[in-house]
Image (cartoon, rainbow, N blue to C red):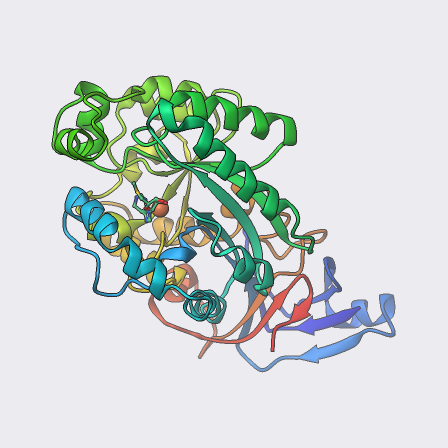
Length: 404
Ligand code: MCF
Ligand code: FE
């Protein structure tokens, strides 16, 4: 058992001052130091400096680790040209994305305070590095393929990857499933994957309504996707409508990424299923998809969290940067409440959506914690300051272990 003695502790309800935390793998008790010393006389005491803040480790629920080689290869500004550039550069990116490059992306996340991430794995090339990562990992094996003729082969490949991820046996590693999107996965495949999700109680995610091209293709089998599908896949209509797609998830709480172009009916369906939206503001901006209507999402009381997406559509895997961009992107929302919601979205709310027992400095939670060095006494606007100022992270604990 250890006792850590920060000056401040950030909890969802309030900011505690002069409280300490007794923890091993989990947080056992939060109380004044003198009280904890009596309860745990043998505990090692970690003394922290003035203005230190203990807060939960950050949770990045959506990142494509395998795309970490991209810097300037992919075309930004518009979704369909980006997609063509992904296909054109696939070999270079895959070739370039050796283990070192993926490891670097994972350690950059750690340095910026990310103690849990959700990896969307398209090929399983990131399995070893994710298994070796110091962070907790929800490893989402991606299922993709819009053509029924290929369904069996694609499903077999997906199952092999899922099985490989199940054989990783370490604390804080959770195999899970990603359905790529409504335009790219055939309903036959979706049904088969959902059966596994139900039988094995796995976490589930999908990209949904990211671009106006996706909107038009799913609604009318028209728009910018038409040429893409006709030329590349000899497919002239969408295999699944948007509402039909969502119906597959009626009984399975799902994390839907982007959702920028969803209509009223789809948002209500997301609400009804108690699903969560993963908001990736930088990715949305870079791929020309506009801004999610967070006011509307809040009005409908829909769960949402914030994540980085991959280096395929971002320049950094840093949730402080992501929150800062969100704060400026949603300029029609009151600043302080948005800042508070953003902090909650990468801690408590993300933990809840991923089904992870962390995201809060609270008794019983896993000890995933950061120590930040604030430069002076915090005030009521701490949430804004946490996002605007890159406070130094002096210690990181994951499942109670100090990360060197
Ligand atoms: O989230 C971004 C943009 N939307 C969709 N997919 C991806 C993103 N970054 C990487 N991807 C991957 C996706 O997982 O791109 C591949 C898929 O494997 C091809 S998309 C048809
Ligand atoms: Fe993505």
